[in-house]
Image (tube, rainbow, N blue to C red):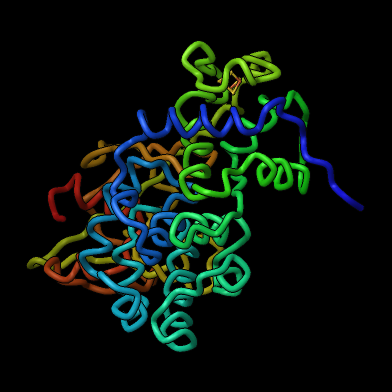
Length: 325
Ligand code: SF4
């Protein structure tokens, strides 16, 4: 069945307005300095489910450790996970590593230049393939992510879904500057056409928009769950006791963390407390200078080696707070 594009009165004007605004106001992000496919790919994978500010902090350090796809492919998985630590959703790091190996082994170290071929790489779905193909190789293919979806729905005034979104995005796309157009759409959604308070008065496509702010979200996000959790911070002679999550754990498999102290009673004060959020849960994390429970497994790790260990984001946060990292 043919899917119709959602209508926007004047696509040519929309492109002009959007790209004019983007040229003047785009954020100065490190992965925008050149169109090297390795850098574009890395930034796109890091940006999935992670805020721009958190990505910037890790992007430079990751590139310092793995400046080329060949260096990434040749690295040990534990080193890749260590460099990823703090970004969360570690499956992305494993897929990134697997894809680097395919690029080197199958494509001789050169990224495939089309969306279709890029989609064959591990961890590269329709959105990521279109982003790399358009930004690094100028292929005229549109992207649809959460920001683009919101902009398209508001501009057309229709509750577009599924394939309709992709058809509409491709209908609007500027074929001469596809990479810039895609980044401009995402940028518009991120900084102007935001979910709750779209800044319509400063929007470059205001006069072409069917809703002009009428579709702003009014429902509040679901409240976060609250949990308290206790961890042992056990040190001796510049070593620290850590446990490794099981390789088949659904979250962060194989990563290292501090041993949990289950059923800890608050009869005394912990050494320190910090807050940590993972998806829908806010944790109050109590850290105790105490030995780990017996039979929890684990290993003494020299403090000097911690930077090479694939730590969970929370473990890294605790060790920083304790001035160990
Ligand atoms: Fe979004 Fe308002 Fe711009 Fe329409 S006019 S695209 S609702 S910011």
